Length: 287
Ligand SMILES: C[S@@+](CC[C@H](N)C(=O)[O-])C[C@H]1O[C@@H](n2cnc3c(N)ncnc32)[C@H](O)[C@@H]1O
Image (tube, rainbow, N blue to C red; front, side, top):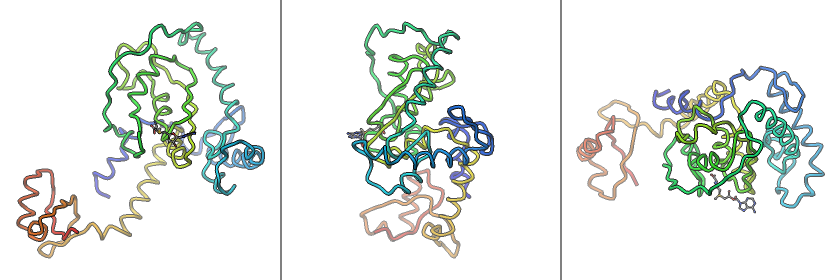
């Protein structure tokens, strides 16, 4: 696989999200129950979710979908593609954690916001997390972090009922002291916030879950590389070109309306030189 493609899955990128240190086969404890590994945890809670579906279906807004599809999309208790019956269990855990954070001096019991946040918030839409998946009116997470740092303190529970692809969840997870997006003046209130993200759109919540739930970067990289290799072996030929008897990979294409340019290699060579970044010339008849 090309080196550039592998960089997409580099530690620098993956470690920014929510990496889980344990190997996939390590024991997992959720709500006081310990499982051999994440697969066993998922299977147990999927069965529980199936049992709870008749009650959940009575809730207004329950998604239109087959039970099996809803169960298979879900990664319970963290993510359910329908109302989540474990919300109160999470809240109870987080409330307990708050008491501990107060004892450790990381939270104030009498936290008060004295002034509204008043500052220009301008963040680029080019960080790797933002660009991993597009979504309409998606907000860059560093912008949300500014508000979280001002209006909340470590351990607080943040609810986003229109969460889209979960940037509020990402921002909550990343309010840690080692995060490059934390402003210097906010360093004193660093610490993870917990988030509850909800949205009407199942595809949005599925993406949000991938962004927000702990995952194993090594496993992810292995699976992503397997998919890339499969796609390359099936469709790679579409990105190949032949010049002077040699086969090469097309790095970039230039779309032009100038019919003369699009068929003449010499003109393309001149164009690619202008672009500067292109590694090889292209001889394609573009539509
Ligand atoms: C502006 S987008 C949010 C994008 C989000 N900030 C992000 O970073 O990805 C608004 C979201 O509200 C959702 N939405 C609209 N009406 C809703 C409703 N009644 N209940 C829940 N979600 C709703 C839409 O599906 C859409 O994903």
